[in-house]
Image (cartoon, rainbow, N blue to C red):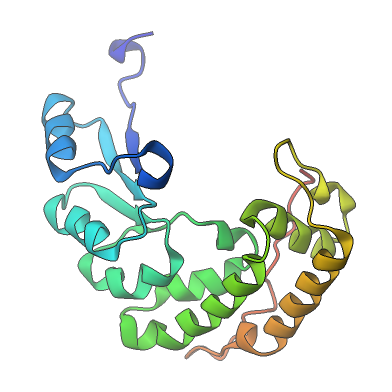
Length: 195
């Protein structure tokens, strides 16, 4: 199948130096966009350095730039960030919506502080099993606890503590109120299909 078979093909570059060992440079992005005009749609930056993400945004106004680091969203929004593709959106989607809607660092500061607290709870064990443990509890569906090796489910005692601490977060930081007055915990876990 060639380009003629998929004329509307668009690709996103995924910068994840921790996994691949190298960072996607501005020069590489420029070369790819010049060699393949109209195909590169944007970059998802999971490098964790907001300065690099800012360089992508400021250097390529025609590309959609996403961050994988949720806490950088308010800082990068004024520069033209397209949004975030992140793990915490699976656990606190309404909260993340409000963070993405924060227009600047000042508006986002209380949300970032609360988000760091939620992340601390979920970071006690690898993120995917932790997130699935929270979703399993909130949806009352143990199927969410299944994992593909090498991932494992957090031990029952750790899982129970993590869920209790998450619920505590919901009752404090998770209910951070924004200008709309909306309770962010009301829709924190959307009805998802079983894993």
